[in-house]
Image (cartoon, rainbow, N blue to C red; front, side):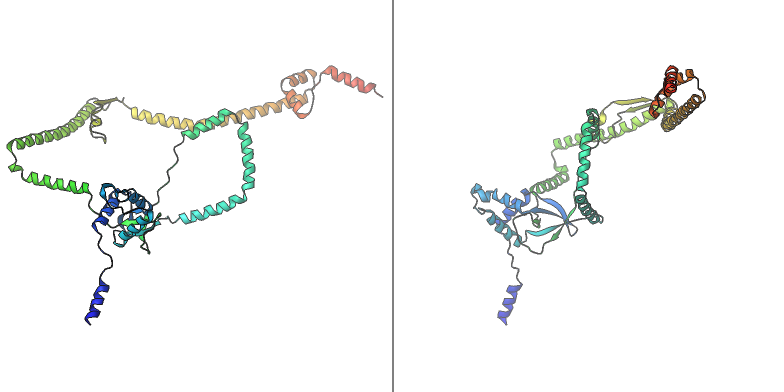
Length: 379
């Protein structure tokens, strides 16, 4: 019975041993010097690293080069992998895998892209022909148009940056260290030396303030004067802010809202300490009714912009009607009048161009008489 109890106790004991001092030193070196990224794992913020970068850092460390009289622990990449696997088994970090968040419509978008690619393969021949025609047209276009289009493209805003996808981490089923792009989450989280020093200084400062009655009289006097200077500086800033508002209101009331005078206009703005006192003042004069005039002028400009194309269209219609009426009257007069003089005038002024376009030719009276006599003389 006693032997059975002993075997049960041995089985219940954890197999992982505590890390040694050297292993803790290696883990600290990686934790504070290795580049890590932040993410969430089961709604907890964690730091993770990639395996290949950890192996590269160990190969460049003092345990691989022998500096500082340290033992050579790492000679090859495989030795680094085996050592990191031992740290993983001692629960200094664990293996995880990335889970990328996807919006509900992304899958449909990807499917549409695949369908579009398949359709694009079918339409390649037609697109190539269109591209050839476009190239020929672009070659014939003048250089000025191409330069103007290039300037427009340069004037447009910069392309949008790609949005970074949010990555979540989940525990991996196989807890083994592998050299590659696998992700490992830190469990070992020692206190950094900077935070330790800052916390120690805060504690010492609080104790020193509590021991103020025990300070030497000269030190207490100096602290007293410094506190008075700090309080007077803060009070002067508050008084200056109140004074500038009162001065602005007084000038605005006396001038009936025509003069705007601000002392230290950037005093309360979100700028640097020295920039808050620049410029010294800002003055602006606004005549009575200036705001109303600006509003009226802006409204008139908009109305003119809307009315201009309408008026231009009406003028074009009137001119077309006039041209149409004039051409019809001229044609009617040319048909009714059969005098040679009117025909000559109509042919020289307006009818010549139209007759040539319709396939007719204008001739003189003498040519017409000669052609008639020639036709009568023929048998």
